[in-house]
Length: 53
Image 1 (cartoon, rainbow, N blue to C red):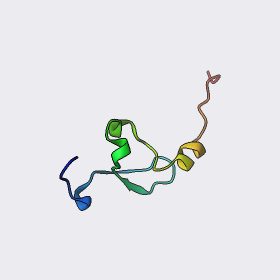
Image 2 (cartoon, rainbow, N blue to C red):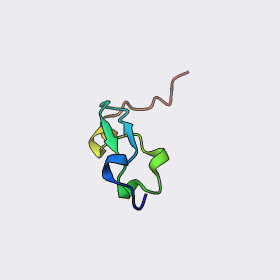
Image 3 (cartoon, rainbow, N blue to C red):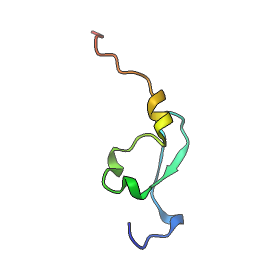
């Protein structure tokens, strides 16, 4: 992402709150796996149900 202007950074929509968020340097190696805009949204996500049949 070196040399890319801030206006041209890729963005995604948060799976929890629905707000758009832009690429950050700390997500450079895992951008494809990022789903939430913040740790707060990640903590508020719906819990997985393991015992459902």
